[in-house]
Image (cartoon, rainbow, N blue to C red; front, side):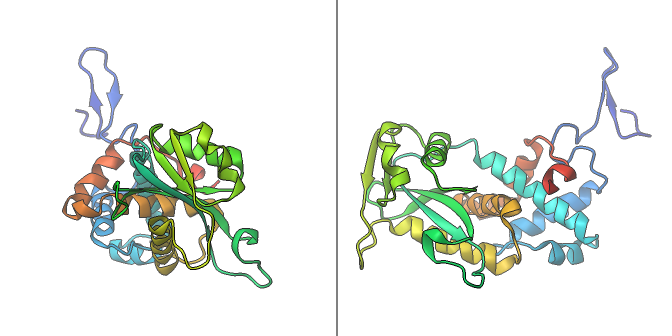
Length: 254
């Protein structure tokens, strides 16, 4: 080890590397203790942490806190991306954001569009895992890509009658369509997850635009999918950061 530079060097080939090389902490100027403290605080609060509140607790600037949070959320999303939904999966679209003046309601709104899926047990008594993706447009191609990326092929996918879902029968083993009928709730769990996600995102964080929405959705999904292992959340978040490739500040803000 080269103590003066905090580097490790191979005795055979003389290659030099650091503890944080190639992971989400790559080339960070923030002390590792601050990183660990940030991950711990985030893991302990179910409501999530805003950059402003975290900066006060860590004693760092707002932009340092914001960068830490965004990189940790990025690692959460990458970790969740390794797994797919299976079994019975409810799929629907949602709209995130605050209502603007003269804005339309429902599918004609100018709010951010999000595809939301949740897997359930066979009897649909309990939700299991969830996936979300912020999209620019709700199209057939976008829906197919979302299903192929996040669903196992033998899944039973349940949707409403929106026309973008009509071709799903060609991409999954089984597709069930539930027409929208007043007073009925054929997709109860996905609508519950949407409500919980909105409360989490809009209740803790304010002024989130479509540009950064995906990272906040990733955090919600990561927490929900590990809700039965809350006592392990710090270790799991830390492992996610250790196993994730780096992302720069420029990439986060572009």
